[in-house]
Image 1 (cartoon, helix red, strand yellow):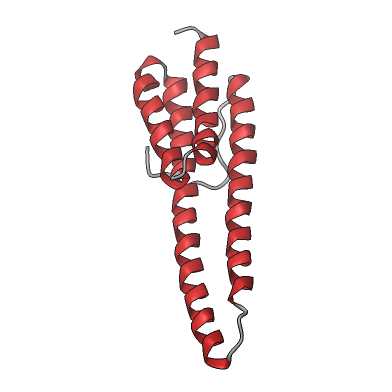
Image 2: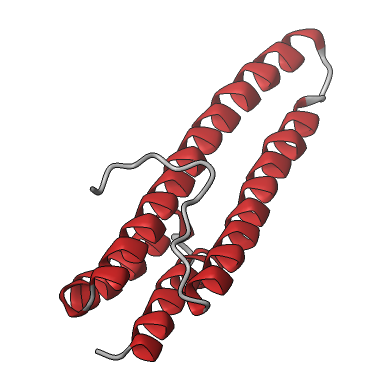
Length: 138
């Protein structure tokens, strides 16, 4: 595989995560699945694609894990607030929903920003490492 194709596939791998995260209803898992499938198909074609695919996959796994944690925390804290609010006759649980959905939105923005930075770096042939990612795939 020539260098231009390597860069193109590495760029696609980084952008696939945000595309799936935004397009699929089950974005918290779709981003992993799409990047994983593309990486498995192309990882043997080039060491650069293999390395950048691992980076993209690890970052998308991290994004999905944080998403699940935020959703769980949101449900738990909203439930606690609703129970407490019903005991005192106040309906303030909506503020908590806005808060954790805001955090979920910030996570989505981080996914977009860092994936675009990675894609631009990959298109230049640079090795990009995400600033925060759990490195499960080695």
